[in-house]
Length: 208
Image (tube, rainbow, N blue to C red; front, side, top):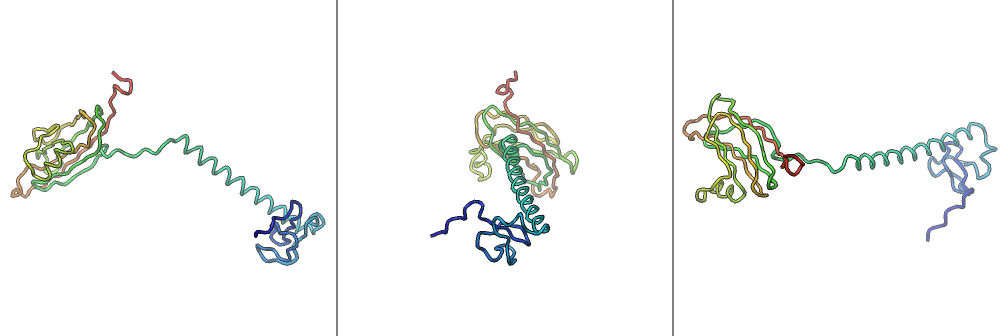
């Protein structure tokens, strides 16, 4: 059974480190110093002892206040900032190296009515054509597995640069495939640059 806490006013203080000491203690439970100042005897203790006790009390109060202020600031800042914003995988920009006959893909979920806009260009060798096709989830599965001839949501006539503006007809996972259309035997690797941005339907945001 836990012993009851000492009644208010029965705590003494350590004459060395100044922390509170339970009534009847012969040593400070924190630093181990002997002869703690008993309750009621603090006002009659030597001046250096009283100074240490006051300083310790002030520091403890300051620490508690600082922690409380810090926690309050953290909570208020989190409420004002709102939920964290996770970058959409279809908002990206980067360079890709495509071996002949190979492709790279950028994919993510698009809400029906939202759209992706972006651009692409070949950097090396300059002027080399790039094939672009957009698939929904089932079409992409057919594409990568080589089962039949998949349809596309959008595709370009291979060109060395161009724009992509694709409005999703329905909510789904979409795959933006950028391919090097040259045959493997050509041995020509194409370096391309692609930038895309996820845009919300302006009609839902009060636009025209």
